[in-house]
Image (tube, rainbow over all chains, first blue to last red; front, side, top):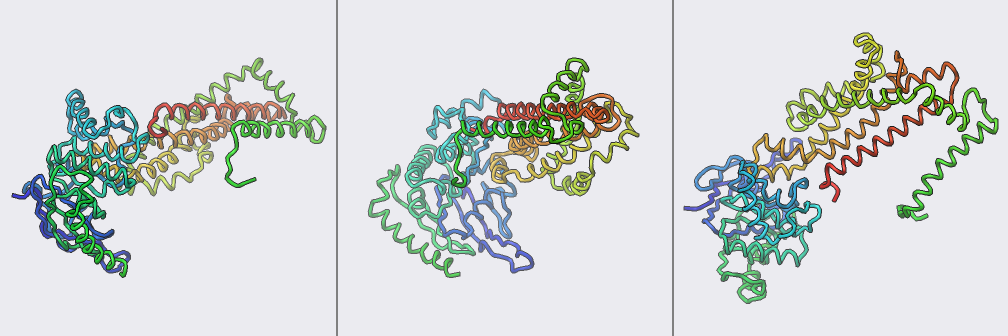
Length: 260
Length: 257
């Protein structure tokens, strides 16, 4: 049985001032197996973030439904951890307190929280920064904390909305390896939205390519590159072949967006 | 001078002080030089002499203390009422829809115009003074806080929901801490306004306080005392503002860093 089931989910935004309603997402069907790492690749404005937000329960679909472990999603909840593109650490909490946030909301006693927090601080390589405020951290460190915060809650699925989109290229590459390393060791069902082709291939066991708005699934590509993956993989012929193929797919869509 | 070019701290201090010097020098020149009638404007030296006499002989420091107590009493009263209402309005839109039109209207009611009514209701005692400040500040605080809370970063709220927060958890552990520095900053601002209201309240139907001393000096043409009183208000305002700022910085280290 699939871990996550997206059934005929579409989204239409009401027209502004009596204008035509805007179709952001055509009905989408997608089944995600447990412990799969899925990247959703598409040009900007294709509705991929909207799809992720619907899975998170932050937005309601106009039609269709989302099932996680057979249960319909109606609202956001701790079983679907999310990392946003914008820096969403709580600025009034330290790194450790941010990571502990979900556990605290659950009512877990402090002694129990401390152990879990320490292990996730370690996992994302932030030892020594536990008591820093988010403002004192670089963008990459903030996103590492955000990943740790989402993972500490032990969600059924991890949703990432262009989490490295605001980072510089070098940091982005390191973050990809870090997240992939965590996934290779801990196994988790992941839905990762990006517009970066290389990132989509490098991270994924399966890439879903979306069309320009209104978004549909254009292609569904299995990535059978071996694990553990190393950054040198990005220059291998297999990787280049995949990249060429997806670049072609995305280019057609991007051109459609530009021409509109 | 290049626009927007910063100035060194040393020069900044010198420039800042030099305006005070110029101002006092001009004041001394027109008064001591006999360019204005002494009856209407005292010179700086007699102002200091009058002030010293006020403090030593007329126990003016008691008036200062009573004015400070009124400002902080009225301000505290207004804060205790206004902060929770402002947060509630910002967080829950039905509460806002219910209260916002009235509060917006009440904000424009001048506190000083309420003084005759408040005297009828509460007499000319301390309660009346506190109420003037209360009426003058409470609606302002409510509205500013409601707007600040209403513009809480949505992505922080969404992040908290995906971490399992309940609706109450969002208000208590996201909306309130996220806006705490802004709320404290708003209170600091309004405390400055409270100083204006207290003097107005003391000018009418009062027998103590800095404002009372000022109106009392007017009938005796003691302009030196009036100016001294005004300067005292300015200094206390400056000091309390400084203390408030330092307190906020200590309370919310995360908002600076």
